[in-house]
Length: 160
Image (tube, rainbow, N blue to C red; front, top):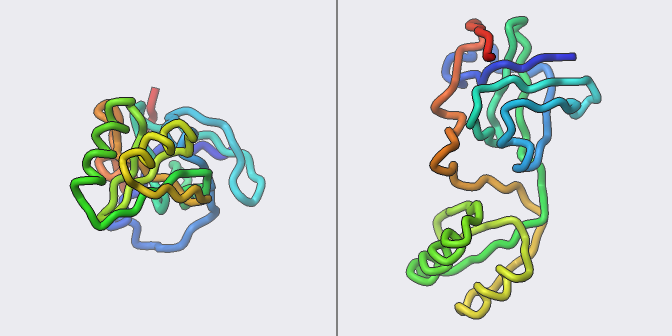
């Protein structure tokens, strides 16, 4: 089994090529310990710092110099588009009050599909698009986005 132990800093990665891809949905990208398979079928284990949130495009490495690119899997999400920032802010406020992981972008919001939440935001005047798309929510207060925990692929250390 391949053990991936750190996130590679793209600036430090001079090689630029990858040795494989790993496609994961959000519920697996928030786990610091995970046994799964690369897209090509090889067994892999994640052994990352607790609280790490992996993003699509992150590169993971190990002490052998292996570089694996992370892909955010498409999953069923609800997306809200609006030119009215106040309406989007209201929706974000109410979704946040329900502790819903939320992706916030200019002109739109996204959350994991839930018909009850869809009805709530429709009542606020927003149209809901249910679609298959990668979900990249904001890092929560107790999670660290990967960009704060990058390491050069030439540097290796153990995580207990």
